[in-house]
Length: 140
Image (cartoon, rainbow, N blue to C red; front, side, top):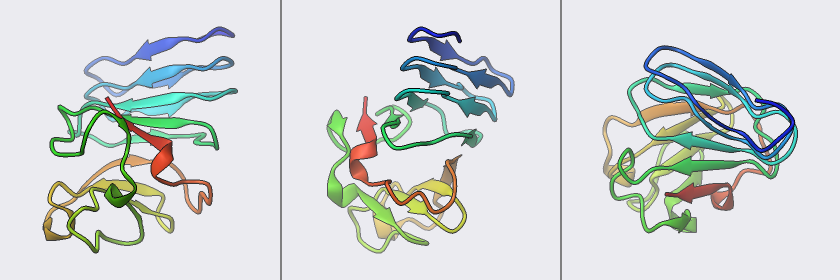
């Protein structure tokens, strides 16, 4: 990417996408990708859960976009519901679908909330991000 608002999409392989300045949208695709938004408020799209991606510079103002096709039952389009997000080691309630482990930096998908026996780690966004809450996620 460059100084403008760029849209970058990876291919099937493992990619390194770098947005640079501007409000960029980065979608790594099906590979194990490294995503760097750069300056300004960026959007990181997760549309495939086959291999986890790493967001190298998650910061306040950035957004994680979750596609309904990759996250069935996540909820309606728009901002992720408050009940669907949890900070901790595991989902503790049935409605908690996205769990941020601040000690490991991983985001995990719990399809059936606390009833999920095999959560999917889909992104490493950084440890101890004290600004993260449900408003940093959108469903698309």
